[in-house]
Length: 150
Image (tube, rainbow, N blue to C red; front, side):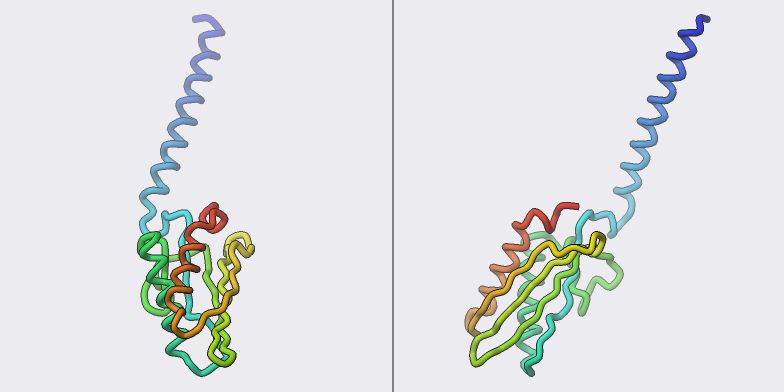
C-alpha cells in the first residue's frame, strides 16, 4: 500500500461521514412533530380601549380564519382557543380603536427569534367593512415574503 492510498481513503471516509451527518440532521428535522414547521404565526385577541369586545373578537377571528384558509391550520395558532401546545416564532398583534363609526385597525407581525417587526399595517374600516378589511390584511400578510423567510 502506498502512502497516497491511505490519504485518499481518509478523505473518502471524511466525505462519507460528512454526508451521513448531513442526512441525519435533515431527517431529524422532519421527525420533530408539530414544531418542525419553519414559520408559524401566533394570534392573540387584539387589544382595544373601547367596550365593544365582541367586535374586537370578531376581527381577530376573521383574520385567523382567513390566514388558516390561505396557509393551512399547521401554520397558524389562535392562542385563545386552540394550539396552546404548539410553538410559534411569529406573533401577530393588533389594536383597534373606534372614533364615531370608524374603526382604526393596526396589525403587526413580529419575529420572536430576531426581535424584528416584519409587517405593519394601519387602516380604517366602517362596521360593515370589517370582515373584508380583515381578509384583505390576511392576504397581505400571506403575500409578504419577510414574514415567511427565516
